[in-house]
Image (cartoon, rainbow, N blue to C red; front, top):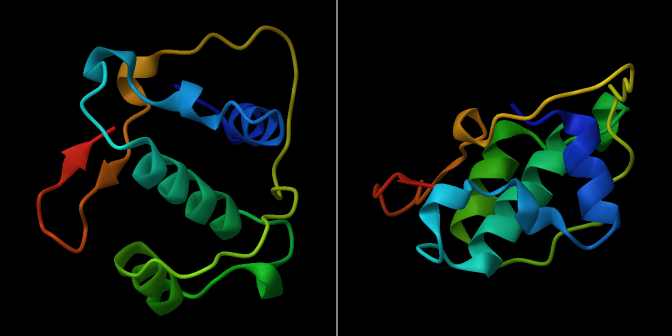
Length: 103
């Protein structure tokens, strides 16, 4: 499992692709995965007014528009050791094409 704070930290460090399921190897397009992560971070921003609506999310997923920089997520809890299980950290891409590729 990957937690929001981990994705946020990796995003800020320029290492967001590390959340992609390693079992995929190189079977995905990095720019698409980064875009999905970017949109996901926009959806969990601390203030609801900063978050996109679902219709805006669908538009962002289907069009190569410029995205705003995400602000800090609402829930950043870092306590104790957090084990990650990459097999449960899948994101479905290909929403517009209907392919449903997992990354």
